[in-house]
Image (cartoon, rainbow, N blue to C red; front, side, top):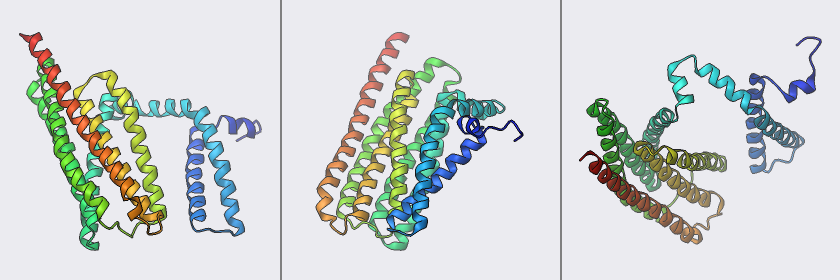
Length: 305
């Protein structure tokens, strides 16, 4: 920074590294403010953190609006230097598959984590979630393997690949019915069983942030995938949407356990309604996938005859 350095101009149009530093600091200040609020801290330093959280949040929002195009351009320029990262940035289909693989790994990790916690704490709750994530991991893994086999069997023939994709799409719809049976059992036990007491308020808030992230991106992907009409991408999207809905249900039950002051029984009706809605969504998605795939397969068969 030389003699021509102008603080106001720098703050209005900062470099990418400074924007990233501000966003990281804002997350830390906001987390500290939340922790201080939860612990009802009233010392003088708490108000400093509240002020820093408010200022950094406001400035972060300003930078997101003003600096997002610059950040996007910088990321794209870096990504183009490598074929893999370039495909992630520029190819939506490739990016969807990559994130689906990551989701599969996360699901497997959650299954192991909940299984271990269930054994250690003798908690039915963790056992329920372990079983659900095992089913979901199996569905994700099966779809990824099926997609790989389809590309191999089609050997570059687009018509054959289209048929394989639609068959996998229909099979995914059928699998959602199997998942729904496990989900219905999980929802019932989730409502009736005792929730774990190991959850802290900070863990619950963190879980809420992650859940809403999943829901928002699941909804965004619905709009994007619908324009592409790719059965495999639609399968990935529907599984992600089901996963987000179940996460929302789990979050609701967790928040009730953490913040209800022991009056959990009074909230069981709300949990049952939400659980029924999640099960209904899974059934509807499965039916739509089976019907849609069957209709499109018949159209392809008529075109090739």
